[in-house]
Each structure stands twice: as structure tokens, then as C-alpha cells.
Amino acid sequence: MTVYEAPGRAGSVVEYADRYDHWIGGERVPPAEGQYFENPSPVTGQTFTEVARGTAADVERALDAAHAAAPAWGRTSVAERALVLNRIADRVEANLEKLAVAETWDNGKPVRECLAADLPLVVDHLRYFAGVVRAQEGGISQIDDDTVAYHFHEPLGVVGQIIPWNFPLLMAIWKLAPALAAGNAVVLKPAEQTPASIMLLMDLIGDLLPPGVVNVVNGFGAEAGKPLAANPRIRKIAFTGETTTGRLIMQYASQNLIPVTLELGGKSPNVFFDDVAAARDDFYDKALEGFTMFALNQGEVCTCPSRALIQSGVYDTFLGDALDRTKAVKQGNPLDTETMIGAQASNDQLEKILSYIDIGKKEGAKLLTGGERADLGGELSGGYYVNPTVFEGDNSMRIFQEEIFGPVVSVTRFDHPDDALKIANDTLYGLGAGVWSRDIHLAYRMGRGIQAGRVWTNNYHSYPAHAAFGGYKSSGIGRENHAMMLDHYQQTKNLLVSY
Ligand code: NAD
Image (cartoon, rainbow, N blue to C red; front, side, top):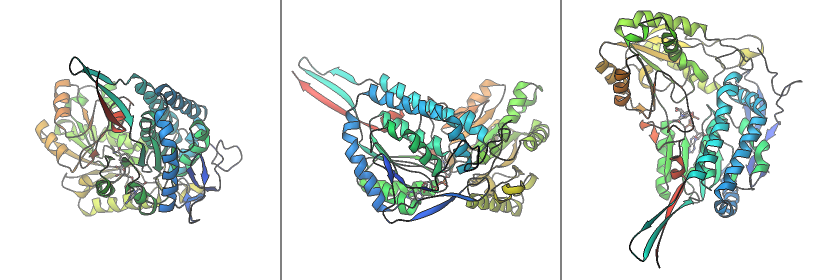
């Protein structure tokens, strides 16, 4: 067990600056209007740094830098771009502990997750896109005896990217890696709740990129996000965040007729069939762990399995064991490597979760465990902690239909697989789902029937770089990860040549 020292204290692996500007043209650039906002750590609720409050003027400066850099970057060989991505991956690996503690301090998530999942995935995504871009091939077709058609991949040019606060470093790299591999220059806007770890990353990797290829403008959605998303100087906007914001992004993009990628909200069903309890073995144990995945990353995951559907024959047994397992999930200081549940990312998010717990109680759902703000004592008393919470109720309730984005799961029962499918699909969303059964035919039929972009079957919450990820219905448009991402960041040039 290790308990990392908080940034700023003697012995800490992280030294956060008191103030962060934007990152434009390869250097720190203060905000045009001179405004900064306070950035508290969810671990204690105390402000630890202040960050540039960007405006349209800062977005324009970042776009100037990106446009200056884009032509040369777009002409580099794929080998060169792959090398840069691999060097960034090396730098992240060499600073894994530092970035993990930085991310925990800025976001509140357990450092063990950063060390074991988020940052290894950051490295893997960088290396994956460094690899696939080199394997990408154009095409040559013979049209007639004298004429040949050549197909080339060309970058889009300058793209905008806007990310949320739940996986700040991973969300940044999910977007940056394919865009850079494809030869684009980027203006990225981090979430205002979690800008600091990304600025620390830019300090660490800035020298590996030609100036202007990656630019970061900090600030709020309406002040810095909108001027970027609505800007006629970008050739694409990639957005991850709430469904309501996604609708706005699409409206802005329609004015400029540019493509959008939208990764939005979810209300993912996790379906457990009777046969999971056929034996008290490793499979059963895995299924119970699969149930507790609603609390992973404090439930702040777009694919949080926030609805558990349990078949009647096993309902009481499975739910009883699942509650025991939930109570055993260790909540505590996020800087302690034994902690499995840390702090919610912001006070607003904490309040939102508590208000949904209230809504659940008022609409008659039965509270089975949790349901309260957790006071972890000492200096953690000011942090944003919520007990993992399990409700039992009906799929028509608001806590089953609306995204809470916290460690809250709503449980209901079903009799027949067709009923499970009906409940699973009775939602606006279609991002993720889980299916648990020893009967692989049943699991396959459910997986094909559920209207969601990712159905985990007998596992949950893995995000390999080479598996396409994205939403059906109101959960989004387009996909992330997988080699197909390169197509989202390129256009095809066809040269039709007569000899
Ligand atoms: P949000 O939509 O409030 O904010 C996301 C980003 O958009 C932030 O950077 C914010 O500043 C910016 N923004 C807000 N208003 C804007 C505007 N008018 N114009 C331009 N930019 C604007 O979302 P959030 O609360 O930060 O994130 C949580 C949401 O993200 C959840 O709904 C979650 O499901 C979703 N999410 C989805 C995925 C996925 O891959 N599908 C992954 C992570 C999070």
C-alpha cells in the first residue's frame, strides 16, 4: 500500500504551478482578457491552482497557430508522425506516477485506476495510432487502358476537440492520437473542472511536437467552447460530453457544414440471467464484480452500468451477494493505492447526484444501500464523496431513465429474455450494455438485440484501442478508437490520370 503525498507538499511527485495559461504555438500564453478561474481539488475541496479563462480572442490565437503549423505537419511522412506519437507515449510512460497523482488531484479518481488503467490506456492509444497509420494504404484502380485512379488520404487541416472532465488525460489522448496520426493540427478545449493535469501533460510533451500542432485553450463552455465549435476556421469538431451540449455542437457545426463526432451520455443496462448463479465459481464472482462496475470511476463513466436487470430465478440471491460486494468496495483517500472509489469530480456533480438520490426516494424507489454524502474525516471532509448507492425500482422511474453520472445503480427484475430486451432498449440512450450468462447463445442474441454501440458480454468496462466505441440513439454520432477513426480525420483525394 502507498499513500501518495498531495501535490505541493514535501515529498510529492507532482509540482503543480500556482497558475496555468493556455498552450498556444508551443508555449504558455496568458489569456487575452487577463482573467483566471479557480481550480479546486475534489479530494479536499481546496483550490490548488488557477487557470486561464479563455474567450473568443484566445480561440482565434490558437487557430492562428494551428493554421500556421497545419500545412507542414500535414506533409510529414507517416513514419515521422508515428515516431512523434511513440515519443509522446515514451514520455508519458516515464512520468506515469507523476501524471497519475496529478490526475487524481485534479479529478478525484483513485490513483490506482490512473496507474493501472487510464495512463496505460493513454500510452496504448498513442502507440496504436502510431502503428495503424503506417499500415493504412491508399488505392490504385485501373479505369481503362490509358487511365488510372489514385486514392490518397489527406488530413482535414485544423480540427477542434472539446472534452469532458471524467477521464481528462484519456479523453484528450483518445482525440489527439488519431487526429495527429492523420496529419491534422488541433485546438483542444479541456473541461473547466479538470484543466490542470492536461496542462501538466503539455509541459511534459510540448517539446516533442512542432509548435502549433497541438494548442490548448482553457475556459468555460459558453466562453471558450462555443467560439471554437462554431468557428468557420475548423474543418471538424469532435466533442465528448452531455447529450444536451451535443445538440448545440451539431447546430454550430451545421452553420459551417463540417463533420461532427459526438460521444454523449448513456444509461447502460447490465443484464444478469439466472444461470450466472448455477455454481459459486469464478464466473459467478466475475458477474458480481460486473455488478459493482457502476461505482467504477465514482460512476462518472458514460457507459456506467447504471441499470441492473436481474432475472427472477436468481434475483434475491444475486442481489443479496451483489449488495455485500458493493459494501466491500473500498472508498477512501484517492491518493491511497488501496482506494477503489474516490471523490466526484466537482461540487456541482456531487450536488446533482445527491439530488437524484432524493428524486429516487420521492418517486418510491427502495434504497438498498448508500444514498448519502460520505464524510471521510480530516482534510478529506471538504472533498466530494458519495456512498455507492443501490436502488430497487421500475424502469419508468427517472432514476432509471436519466443519466446521473454518479455511483448509483437502479435495479429491477425480469422474467423472460424478451422482457429484458424490452427494458434494456426502453431508454433514449444506446452507448453501452452488459450481458452475463453461461449460455453463449442467449448472450449472443441479447448482445445483438440491445441497441447500443458496445455490448460487453461476460465482462464490463474494458476499452481496448482497437475496438470501435460509440453510441446508438441519443448517445452520439460516429465512433472513436479503432483504425476506422483515421477516416474521421482524413479526406480522400482522388487523382484520375490519363497517360
Ligand atoms: P458537458 O457537455 O457539460 O461539457 C463537456 C465539454 O463541453 C466541456 O469542455 C464544456 O466546457 C464544453 N461545453 C459546454 N457547453 C458548451 C457549448 N455551448 N459549446 C461548446 N462547448 C461547450 O459535459 P460534462 O458534464 O463535462 O461531461 C459529462 C458528460 O459527458 C456525460 O453526459 C457523459 O456521459 C459524457 N461522456 C460521454 C463519453 C462518451 O464517450 N460517450 C465519454 C465521457 C463522458
